[in-house]
Length: 121
Image 1: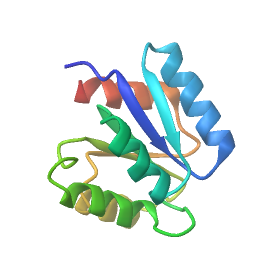
Image 2: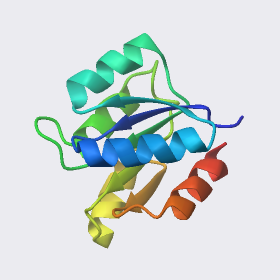
Image 3: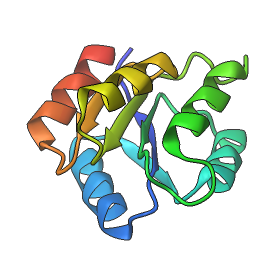
């Protein structure tokens, strides 16, 4: 099943705009959230096919939020790709252990991200 609806969770307006533009140009509909509270509101409104998750955010960080989403039966099937400036191998491993399906470092390479999204679809 192709990925059509994406929820982007990032506290940076610049990143939200970049990712939204990229995904919309590739025929995906995008909803955004800037923190964990907004992310859960968006999930309750409409379940996406994919979540792009930043790590460094105020309040609950992306690792914690990924773990929370994966522990909820109604959302546990949604693939999550971590999209973060945290580029150490230990960061990637920790993200995957929280339930992320993949990991992309910022600045995001559009081709790499789209290839990873396509691989999930």
